[in-house]
Image (cartoon, rainbow, N blue to C red; front, side, top):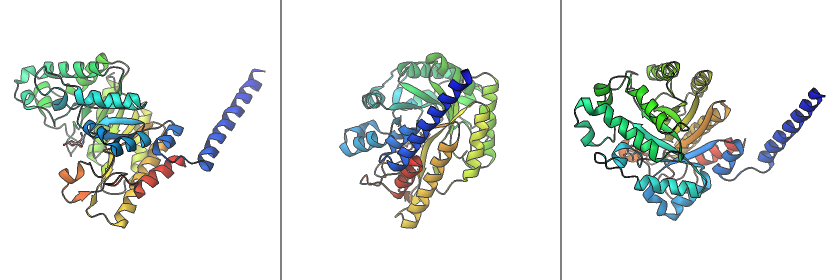
Length: 341
Ligand code: XIL
């Protein structure tokens, strides 16, 4: 009797799944958000809260994304520009926008070497730990229940995979990483906590060291839930490597988020480059969808009109899914078709 019931349940489940799949084939989603929602995937973009006033920007964001991350508004210098003076105005605006539109908020970032105000780095080393602890407790506490996941530590490894020489490492020691996760967890036990870095989506020493770092944290009982692959690319990624890399985290019981994807192109972008870019995005999304533990895919901006690339990589641009006039690019169509697949 019991096995007959289980078979029945299995049949119903299978036919529901088939209906859903065939629905996607006969009735493909036209927005990234709808397509990602059907798959239960988070799809997001980095946002500048000041731009939410612009109708095209806000419309594109809410139409195509179910997740947002603050491009700068939650960084140390933004939320604690002066000692003990927290300013959450811009970040709160983003959270309010997200709540109104049923979007999730990813937090970025608590511990980093960059965009840290001078008042911090001028302090005596013996005060560093208290400063960091206070900062993390206040910021995570402020967004408790509103930010579902945090990049707790960002870019702690240099390009060779060694621990980056930062104020935090010099003054607190290598343990600053584990401590940061513990403080964040204490401030919001339900938030998912991530280590986030760039250049680890391709094979090399840095990717290995990042894996070891995260593996060791987990083995020590540090509350860590996953790894963020930034994915700032300029070419088609090594997708076999990415698939294997993600599965190594899956074996540890950890999630992967693709956190900051963009694919920069030499300006002016040629048709050929835009098609290459579309393939790069397609592969990343495909790998995320196929992995058992990749739960979020985010791009570092919404439109080529506002992207960090031209400022940081002179001569490059056109890195996102929508062009300067918010028109969907080949990369957009590649991501959409991959999600609809
Ligand atoms: C960048 C922002 O996009 C810029 O506006 C800012 O001037 C510098 O930082 N890796 C990260 C992000 O983790 O925080 C960076 O964002 C891009 C690289």
